Image 1 (cartoon, rainbow over the protein chains, first blue to last red):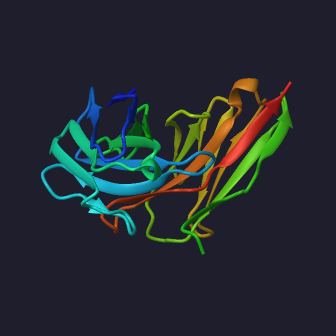
Image 2 (cartoon, rainbow over the protein chains, first blue to last red):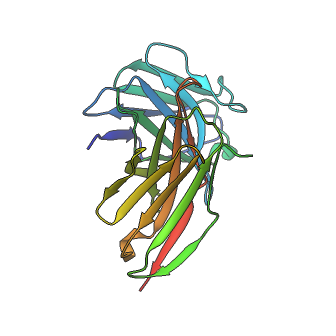
Length: 115
Length: 111
């Protein structure tokens, strides 16, 4: 099956620092990648849709200046949480959609804790 | 009305039982449908795509009714390892290819 990696798997940082999360599709190309956030016992919340070579499309209520997304290639998208605060602590999951097929494959997630 | 709705759950069933999950979607332009499962504190994993003609994969059967905008997942002979949250996913290609997840239905299979 298609594999998506995500790095780092967990991170603890101080309030005010920026954290960068990488999402890679390892054995397939993905023109579209998605970034989600999930709080405990809640469903996935789509934050933004990232298309290779163009600006990301953010969902309502998600600050684009706080959550910077770069999709530089067909296999890599990055999410940078700028000036992180404790309320940004969450499980961040990326997914990549395989060209022509439509299924999404998820990375293992990054657990962010902001102190 | 939410874009994708699922049975609220949780479902607690004995091993060997048959359990059915229901999902409805509001946008008739939706074109692709999937079932994912998510284990606690893990990422969602694709269980199966849902085709118009219905499809089966072992103990799992998915059905799609476009007229009623309804999707179902049937699990036969439940195993303990089936315990997870099942997510209904709808892909609407008319809206910048937006993907919408249902809230999920939790299943616990009891020995």
